[in-house]
Amino acid sequence: MNLNEGFHVLIIDDGSPDGTASIVKSLFATYSNQLFLEERSGKQGLGTAYIHGFRWALAKGYKYICEMDADFSHDPKDLARLYEACKNGVGVAVGSRYVKGGAVENWPANRIALSKGASVYTRLITWMPVRDPTAGFVCYRREVLDAINLSAIAFSGYAFQIEMKFAAWKLGFKIQEVPITFKDRKLGESKMNKGIVKEGILGVLRLRWNSMFKNYRNKVQNSASYISNTSPFIDKEVILESK
Image (cartoon, rainbow, N blue to C red; front, side):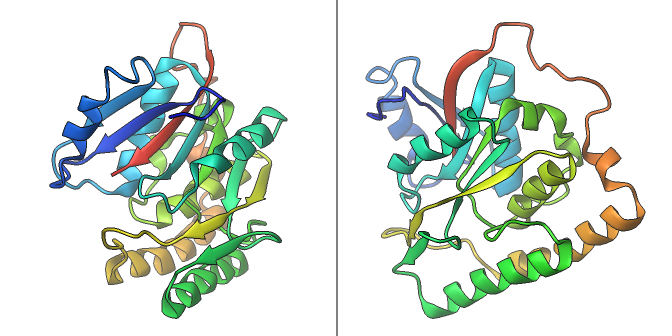
């Protein structure tokens, strides 16, 4: 919250048992009109949380919308570089572990192998020119999210990250990868499980199949020029953090 760029922060909380919502509410007075909270009942999935946040940000008129993990695996100081990439004309800026200058710290060997393997697999199947397609540290220009039919995004797990980039790429937006260092969380446990891995493997095949034979571009594109709100756009950035 102390970053000089004046970022606003939205926390998406799905009833976390660790009291996340209460902590956020206790900070409202300190960060008035900068910190926001959206509460949902039950665990509804990573993808639906981000889509909820995207719609909230579009309705509020934000021009730049970032997403990141709330466990400090993503360094908030890197937000400025993602924002600058989008401000300079890129549609989607990806905080990438797997481009020159990117790195991973404190991750076990099996997680690194799974992540890198998923990245290579996704590029081979989809031909999408992104070296870190599963990355969850991303900045979007609002034009990108306006153009995507968010209701047509099929996945709710980590495959959601792949499909959002794939949809933006298929709609003709430029994607730029910005090198970052990803640090494994110090507290809590990863949500990775067999179901998420299965969704990723089958989901990538489904994306490729649909893009070849079912006119995927028309499916994920809003049918008309879409403006979410008649109020003026806010020349600010909002960070979506899923908890």
